[in-house]
Image (cartoon, rainbow, N blue to C red):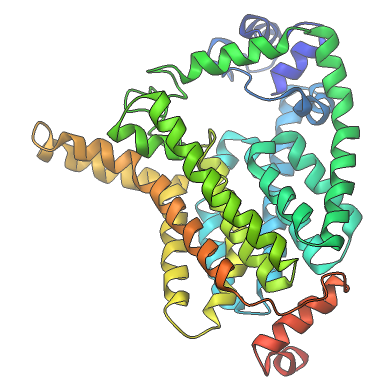
Length: 420
């Protein structure tokens, strides 16, 4: 993103890889450590022009300074999102929420190492969720969600849709966010359109080439970079193991998500935004949103939104609490960078014992677990979401009042403990 933005500042098309590599090479020659980046190894630009509204200011700085500021922003927003959602869940089960958040953030080293934009988008989205559900610093929440949509609309777009559907108060927040997103996107879009008027077919061509059989973004078994650390976790990956045909695995992923999304939309409209139903609605759509489109492990930090719902269910008797905990832990482990690296190391150690006999098991172990666990987690929370009784028929009451009322109604004595 940095060198793509530098290319744009040089009045060259950032969606043509040769332009980006040339600009990067020229800058590295002037840098103190010219071997820090290999221009020929830079990944293709797969982002929409909206991202440049955020990254162009960084491109005005030196690469070293821009890198430090970018990583600081990435880590700061991600940690802030974790802390605020833990605070939101602390009214139910602070210890469990803290343990899950700790496990997830400890396993989220991959976006930090790679400087991946997903961590910023998810961290800002989490801040916005806390802001909207608690009714505090709403203007900050609007700005955070708007920037998140500029960076990764396919990561946090369904969260925005939830607030659009979940009652009048939340709809107002969503519409303000939409207006802020459009205004903030204009500079990047206008600059790209002027400098690179053919950016749309160029981006489409890059997506097609990278997703072709054997390409880095191919979800199938032949993918060159799809199944190691930072693997693709969309549903296409699991389906392609059984039928490696884009017409089949894309149609299957879209159909499964489409049916579940329609059910989720109907439930969201019916519930109209009480606190506990909101937590369940966000917990359901967070893993489901990873299934239909291209996502890698770094995008799975969006599972942060499932932690408050898990903490809420943990306070209720029955099997649902254990299912929620088990699915949450497994989902974090199969999508986390550190745990997945350890898992691949064990697989590599075992591979000589089954090579030539059960070799497909080795491939299946890499491709199937993450998408299917995300699907199971999403369906579970969608089921609980649909069966959850509506406790607050006044969705336009102040959100902070709904929060306190919702917690106190479900867990008698919690208010007294909180006051003490």
